[in-house]
Image (cartoon, rainbow, N blue to C red):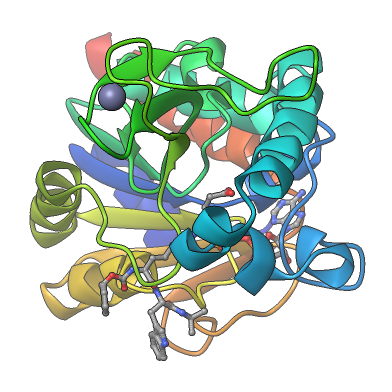
Amino acid sequence: MIISDKLNSLLTRVNSVCVLTGAGISAESGVETFRGARGLWSKFKPQELADFDAFIRNPELVWEWYNYRKKIIRDVKPNAGHMALAKMEKLVKDFSLVTQNIDNLHFRAGNKKVLELHGNIERSYCIDCGKFADNLGITPEGKMPKCPLCNGFVRPDVVWFGEMLPTDVFEEAVETARRCELFLVVGTSAVVYPAAGLPITAKAQGAYTVEVNTEPTEISHIVNETLKGKAGDILPGLVALLEETRRKNER
Ligand code: BJW
Ligand code: ZN
């Protein structure tokens, strides 16, 4: 892995790191990304699945799609990229992990705190009374789950297009972007806002911004440095550098 002298030297002393992840970090675990030739959006239409009006029109279809993805996600394991970020949380004093993913893999890798901007596939809530529930899904007979309290429609607790992100979670993510010294953007096409604005916020306040991605993205020309490759190959290398310098400093 080739990194700049600037990043190398920053890793020896950095105390505040914010990481934003997207679907690409879970790709090596076997979770499909959204965009690109083999992404979910090449087979399914977002306006029929990741949209509240679509849910009201055809809740069974939307639930079927989430059940299909839930099964995949439960069967896969966190990969070397997720594991590296769990290690990074232990090494860096002020560490924040912000994810657009709903797949739980950061928690399963061992991260204690994850700011989930787009929700979590394992949670759902009633659109009538707001009650939250875990692990609800389509019934074995293929029926929609219903609210145990009011019998209302239950939906996955994920953020669809045109919906607000959870305010407290997003505000905390902005705060971390505003104070970090190093901002890593990992495995996201950076086309979906407001998440894609976070590296821009970080750079504007002086953070060094580094992108880890297999392909160029919408923010490649904005970040300070691009590390081209798989998250599972690059992140362990960055963590090894962090670890090495911390060990030296302790001596
Ligand atoms: C690897 C790799 C490896 C692969 N290693 N890398 C016009 C302009 C600007 C904004 C808007 C606009 N019109 C509408 C908007 C707003 C809209 C938006 O941004 N739209 C754009 C698409 C145009 N945003 C919203 O609606 C958001 N809400 C909002 O703005 O609220 C305010 C508001 C409310 C009401 C009215 C008006 C404003 C909500 C966005 C919700 C996004 N939801 C989804 C679905 C979540 C649930 C689910 O999963 O089912 O979130 S869509 C989907 O995209 C999902 C993802 O989190 C999100 C981002 O995708 P991500 O993670 O970047 O994945 P990919 O596939 O795009 O990229 C993968 C990357 O990995 C690629 O770059 C690969 O190269 C790379 N890669 N392997 C490293 N091994
Ligand atoms: Zn209810």
